[in-house]
Image (tube, rainbow, N blue to C red; front, side, top):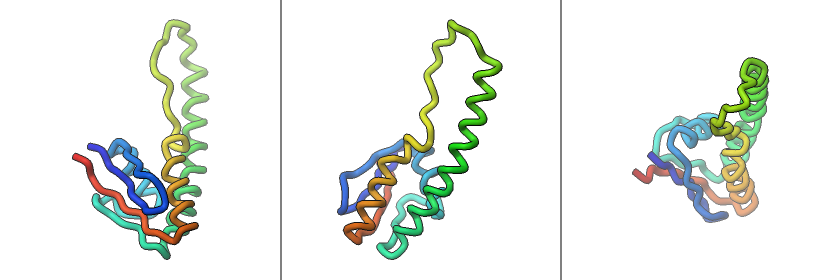
Length: 111
């Protein structure tokens, strides 16, 4: 499933459902799809997301350090993990633009 975020302040953002739902939860919202963040609530959603990302980054760093210590296989060709902070960057920018232009942010399923 894909989830697309919409705001008049920026271009649409489409993400895999499991990632989008994590970010929605980090913003302090129920993971129900569709959903909306009212104009007055966008700053708090951004603040919640940024605080949650700090915690998640620390957890990802600890996990990566543990994996690096135990796995020194030079032939390992697995894909590197994409951090939640990297995945959240477009949504953070959308929220910042929505604050600036005083717009809502919505999301819906593209399935």
